[in-house]
Length: 120
Image (cartoon, rainbow, N blue to C red; front, side, top):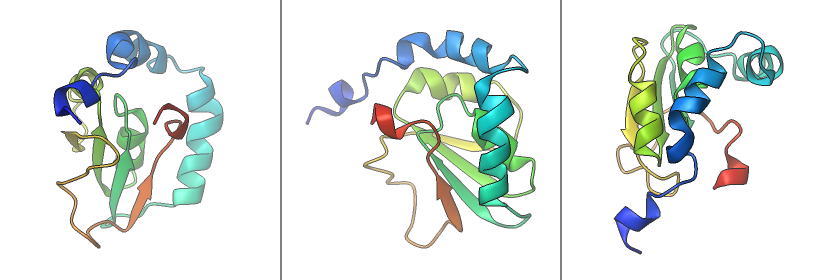
């Protein structure tokens, strides 16, 4: 498969809009999904968490507030560009969920994939 072709996503074209949307305080993501992700994940300082298909980094940044080291990956370079605008300590990679070449076996304590499986 042509790598350039495989990085085309419909989310890349709406990266700025999606970032603006998630910047609002009263969204389904902030009010419903985030509290439950944080509760179920229960990330702790010193843990290393992988956010697969992290989009513009909303959940990665929130998880990082726990003190965990967070690494995010998304196939859309436009979304990663939006994610990198925020100082958060999160490391981001442009990579498809099927090829996370930067990740080593056993490197992460946990991984999340929030609101993305339907798009993969």
